[in-house]
Length: 280
Image (tube, rainbow, N blue to C red; front, side, top):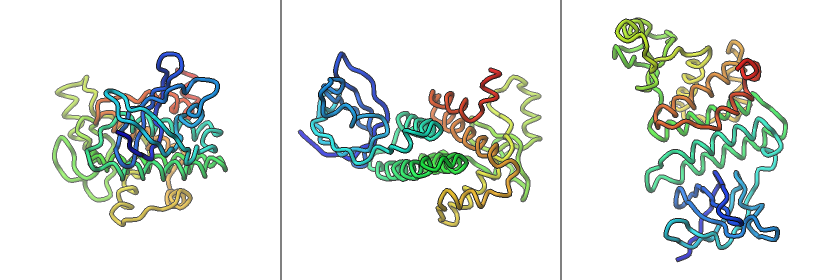
């Protein structure tokens, strides 16, 4: 039985000599695993179309283990992302994440629209090489995806003491195992009991302020453009470092929540922090 789907290609790998297995995310059906037969042949209608990040309109035939791509029309290839090294690594991170998470049935549309909108904006920013805006928008995308999945970080209550954070208090630690901030007093008590614990980590500079701003945007039902987002964060001390820290925190938080490591983060981290990478 054939069916149609608009998809974004998340991952590909080779099958035998000429076929390509595709990990796809579709607006209508969610995750799809399919095979593009003959994609590696010199003369093929599927080769260039079925690359990672391409948005496609497909006709597929249902198969036992893998569906079969019968027709493919490219909607967009996000060519500016492909020509910008930072944008490409950011995009690979978000599609890697989407390839590893489970989305409930009948809730496929919002993650697809969120990803498509993100890639469209990233493509525009890549053309002007606006690096801070690309990182800010990527952090905002991860925040919205994490919230959609039900893993939004708890910013008001300590996971260990269960006490509410005092107004204007900026917490210094985060309990990744419980997805919540941790008070300094509760953290010290934890260390006395278990000095080798690895679930509570120090929050790096700027992270809490960035997350609080994202939460405020949600409460106000606002979604600023990347440039507007940066303007609102102009008062942050060392904004570029804070944005890098925020993006690192969000991918780590999601990694803890779903018990998966994202291999794409290691390369992106080296791009964002080249000085640290040289010392490693």
